[in-house]
Length: 62
Image (cartoon, rainbow, N blue to C red; front, top):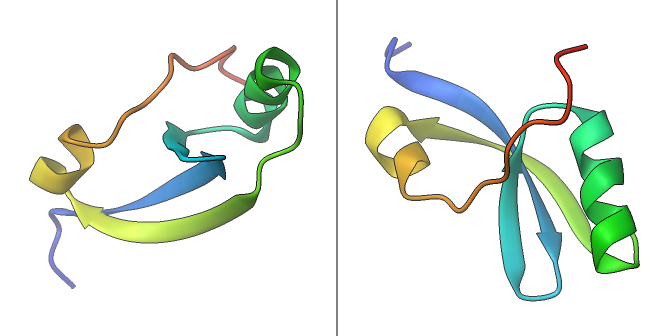
């Protein structure tokens, strides 16, 4: 396996995609948006592709 690949959790709210690290982050976004995510999936990205994903700041480290 290429060491540059990373497993990334991506969730979709309507037409917006967010890279999330923790389930706590998904819950925080859901509160702001007002509904649960339409889709949550895990993808493998290389570092360059991952940098182009829209993302939110992580809420907490646990």
